[in-house]
Image 1 (spheres, rainbow, N blue to C red):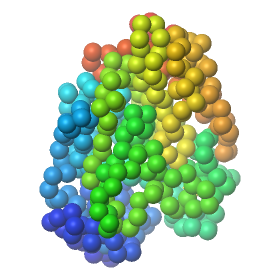
Image 2: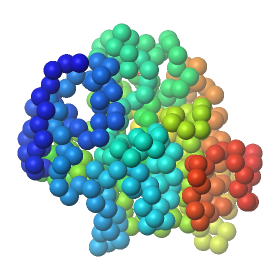
Image 3: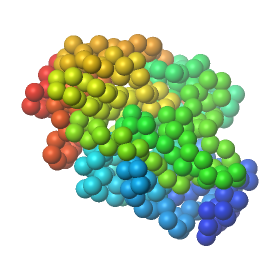
Image 4: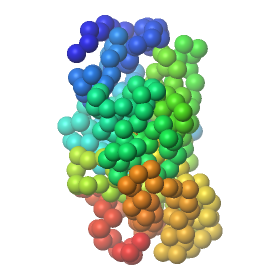
Length: 352
Ligand code: SF4
């Protein structure tokens, strides 16, 4: 373990000032950061503990009907908030599909969005990794890479973003409020994470000192509550990151789709919004043909980065399945376990 400074600011301004120095990192629950430090992957010179900052642990309804969720709200508290689960069911479903109950009890909204990739080579300081140590190479390219990206990857890095939570949030046009050295600004969540390009070490658009203080969901996001689902496929039922996942949300008028949202997880270095697929569903009648066509469009640009061609077809099927489940209607109560692609639901085709 490296030596590091520890500071616990009392105000936002003090926190930003303390974290602008090179080598600083914010600490909230630490469910990812402390593991990285223990493994010698992250070596911050200063930890800025934000857990005592006032006012960041609230969920508020805004005057326009949207939601503002403080960055220190715990994942479990948000997922189990009945009003939130009713209005944003796909987000609650995604939260409950992530990590373990113990981790969800500790992990925060802000930390979830900023967690690091789970590429095993990133976590092994003996491996070459451009994301951890720029310019060293990428051992995943010629190694074990069946879980890696099929969209938006580059020769420098083929890692995926691990958050479930972020996937429906991107579909629903969420944004983050960021406090920085020049004051407060709002960033659409879809623009927060960067694709790797030649600089995979720059994972987000945040600048030194920037602190996510809240997540915002616009009022329009709540209009999908009746038809929104998150489907996650993974190698075991709990405590595993997504092989592929999909969030789907629909607004229906009779037997027509008037608005569709779809985003994919586990396929790229950021949650992947599938706008062409959404556009193709406008005016369509919900059903297998329309959902398969949309899912095909969502993966149209996908190509394997290694031994992971299977993920492309898997993602297509999970996207079509999420759309079918969304069209069938959000269940009165969320399932005890997240939606399984293999579970039956009334009116939902099994071979989506
Ligand atoms: Fe590192 Fe990215 Fe390569 Fe994984 S895929 S070893 S994170 S550069």
